[in-house]
Length: 405
Image 1 (cartoon, rainbow, N blue to C red):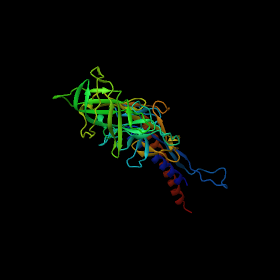
Image 2 (cartoon, rainbow, N blue to C red; image 1 turned 90 degrees about the vertical axis):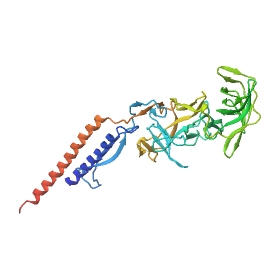
Image 3 (cartoon, one colour; image 1 turned 180 degrees about the vertical axis):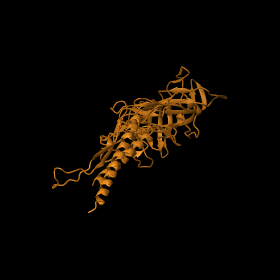
Image 4 (cartoon, rainbow, N blue to C red; image 1 turned 30 degrees about the vertical axis):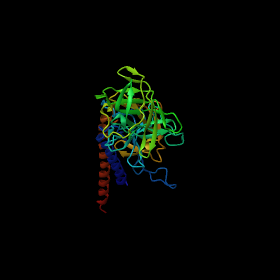
């Protein structure tokens, strides 16, 4: 009996050693959470057992992950993020019905389509917002997201890749088809031939979602007579009409240009174009190329372009579950929801108790190497002690077998 009891001890020590080894191996992994073991006494009991029943060893009851935060490593890279709090980033696997995972590893990259992804290609999830940062709601509070619209975060290369999508609350900033046009336009009494007009971040003002106002309208390029136009004109009081086709939303007309500004000067003697060419640009306008991405503590992702215009692309969503130790670890500091973890709860950063977003920093693992090395010593002693018990039991059996009658 002692042989089998000690064998459970050897297995326990080996399991303990494996867990500690894994902790040490991942001490440099971003967002990694250390694991501890929970062992319990193994007792063969029955209603007829005596009160002096002797245990039969030990068994592994559970492996428990410690979700306390790791220390911070500053990187000064905008897409490197960490959560200052208890929440998790939410990422979605590829495919039409991708699985949502939770992660503390915020070392995000961009793929070939400018989607913000993890190292294994999972898409970072953000709340859809308008250009003022208001989060969209579908009104369905019973949904997993509480009725708020969630999407993949995609970065534009140029301002003319910013377009508008409709929602029950107005315009939605999205990256994809161009919302731009080429036209002849009069600014301050001067005709600019073949000017490029871009409108983004405007809001719908009618229930049919065709009339736009506000946002930022930009006029660049073209010629004034035989001279190239080098000025950039912007307006925040323009109005326009859109047309939705199978390929997306495009400008149907610019109704009013509003007051245009350039280099600190304002111009009101402007005439809106009577016709538009909405053929999208293949390469984008270099004067409106993306120049900077910034992520605020509330998760709002702001894109700044070379012409100074800014758009809020979304707000990083955070998540959590009621029982974190019920989560299923899938590697790379990712976890998925299970029946024992409870449902996934979506939350906003900096307002929901799950913490704020820190851009330009990464969370290191929460491994204490000193403690892990001490654990190695303890596990070695446990293994040696159980080995000694097996050796002693073997000697005792040998003595019995050698008794001569």
